[in-house]
Image (cartoon, rainbow, N blue to C red; front, side, top):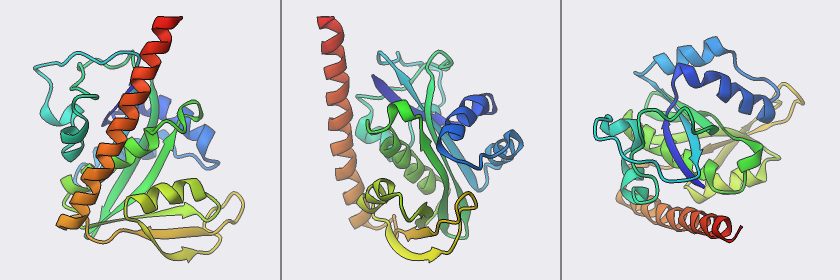
Length: 219
């Protein structure tokens, strides 16, 4: 299976909400998503899609429509520029961020339960990091449930560190939120770390795709 990220559109909202309903107890309204998507000055929202085969390139596609900055440099061989029409490729995850001052705040990120554990969330996080570069953010921040240690490990891997808590932040059960921050994402050290992490992610996803192709041929 091949995964790729692209900007979220208003047509994507129903599929995004289906995943959201399986991931969060307090989903956003379609109106909220529309408002966020339209606010290009300070918001970026992405979706992850899957395809059983690599998608052929579209020479007429806009450069940013399928390749997201540094991410494309690392995984271009595995995630080539896609055709404009990707509606046949289901959405399997999504994420978004806001620019607040110099910080990019990750507002939401989720993966379809059927595709968790395959690197889709990590791919989306990389897309959001590139979006943060695009809107000239200096650092990234987010909130995560204190009990969600799986997500916390991913964030730590990409340079997020605990910076405090928001007591009873989640209204469904009153759970605290752990606030996490990165240092500057624009230093040579962070860019080097990001490049190495993406190299490993590329290898992981490529290996998964090869194994899937091999199993299909055997069947």
